[in-house]
Image 1 (cartoon, rainbow, N blue to C red):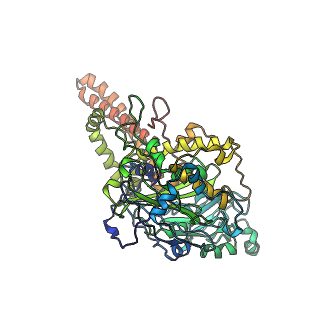
Image 2 (cartoon, rainbow, N blue to C red; image 1 turned 120 degrees about the horizontal axis):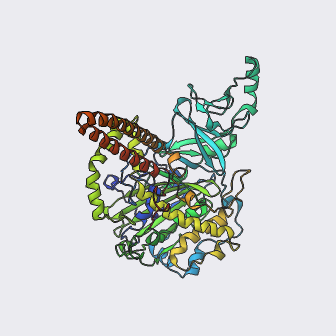
Image 3 (cartoon, one colour; image 1 turned 30 degrees about the horizontal axis):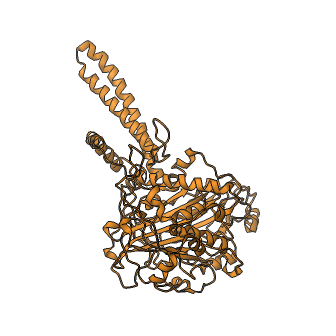
Length: 626
């Protein structure tokens, strides 16, 4: 759940083709953390003036070049840059960014001044208040969606369902049939691309209008019922842009007009969309702790560092950390549409970097790191959607522009035993790869799924580390009566990002997420360890690649068990015959094959577990995260 923080380079033309692209895997979101720990040298450079209005005028292309996802899901996966544009219906005033020198002087102040950088709560004009229900929210990477099935989703606590309707256009309606309020996501997509309710067979077109009411007594009665506004499913504005399905969680004619005039949050990124595919997870923590985490890059030096197995101390293999001296909200940048922060480095490897992070309400954080020569070093695009109290989606894309921008943090040390084991299992690994390439229904889906789950455990580990910390913060804040200002002690410049985000929430966003009507944020945020470590709801159920791979691994397990049983039976028969004829070799071979099949079935179960939870299948059910 990390990423690299924003910043802007000089506006000189740049050859993007030279940027080193690294495809993101599923949990790239979490993997980002590791990347954050490694950004390296870049001198502060003069910030360019940029306004919310000018950002809106520069719309990025919708196309995102498809990058082949790597199997290794280390902290260094990357791909993508977001555009952070104001998701407001009114243009905000131009914000001129200060020069580097001014920024440095404003951000190297004592802690009290740093916290003050976040604008304190006060009376703010209504026009400068962010309206949570009137904005575009990212709901899913397009490649994650099931094109021939209903896709259930949540935004601001409201349940919606998306499907590919007539003409190949994605549509979104409330996940509630107007007949008896059964979930439409339980249904299916009909031959004419209509959404069919499984409860009583009502059918709806892309606009939510009832196109068929099967139990009507005659055609006239059906036509009358279908013409009633009460027969319509509530439809919401939706569109595909930048490889993501976006939803505007307010219905009605005015909402459609307002949504059509409002760019998505990623439209403000100065350098456009990053190449590659989006990664996405649903975090078992709320919107506020998730956003705080990404505005706190220095935590990567500890939470995602390597630790020695022998004494549990921070390993000398980590880059030597150093206190941040530059970090603060750009003066004049904060408003309902969001704000910008600038900061320097936080370890010996990135001491001279200059970074800028542009937050566009409610969901987009775009980071640009520059090296000491003012060249792009590392880019990060992070999106967040509050799904329900205590949960939020997180999308990630990263792109390393230079080789040294990505170094693994928190990697597991490879031992001699690991190398020997790898040699012994090489034949079995080759057989498995052959099977998943030629014996499955959709090899392309499965290969991506394997990169997310079986080969993507490093990214899951980073996510687990973040979740444990964020969950603790959320639970503590739930019982605190002092609010964040009284509960958090933020004495260092590195805390300015958190203070800035909290200040924006207080001053311009009503103090927190405004949930849909009827949704209350009163449930306890305490989640058992098992729920914090689970992976199915976090990612697998959202991703058609992982669901397909999990299903194929189940089929492989069944086949291995069936083959093992057949070999055992053959061994019994051959053993009895061999005892009479003096030919025991066939029985021995049969039993050996049965043993190999049992081992293969067990390996398939282990791989399935990677898609379900971070808990080990054997031994103490608590993973080693550090």
